[in-house]
Image 1 (cartoon, rainbow, N blue to C red):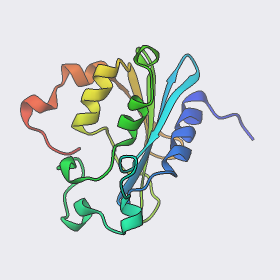
Image 2: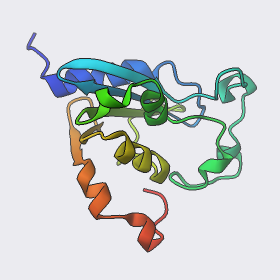
Image 3: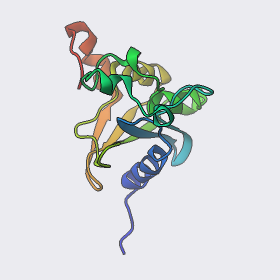
Length: 162
């Protein structure tokens, strides 16, 4: 058995983290890493004390057939990236990397071409995170520099979804 490279190792941690998710549409796990140490983790779930979609058996966004990347005000959950950022000290996030993995609830397949939503992008920028690694398959991933989110501001062009 070969040794897993560091990026896939951290993406594996994000994948394990998503197993705690409570969304019945898509679950994501996020891990923030700095200097080869875990700063924090986060998964998709309703705010503390509120009912989760998995417990209620309904997803309002799914019910309304809202496309991914749109109308997140209709979602009960806090996103994985948001939960990871909320749980971390800002000084530990400056220059850190965020590792993100998403799977569809219905079939367990990786979410194709996933990206942080517009709100998560803004939080990632303000947290001082430097780069993001997003899992596409068990071995393949994309690397995104957060600086690209700053320079290519989709909100100025009214781009929706991803």
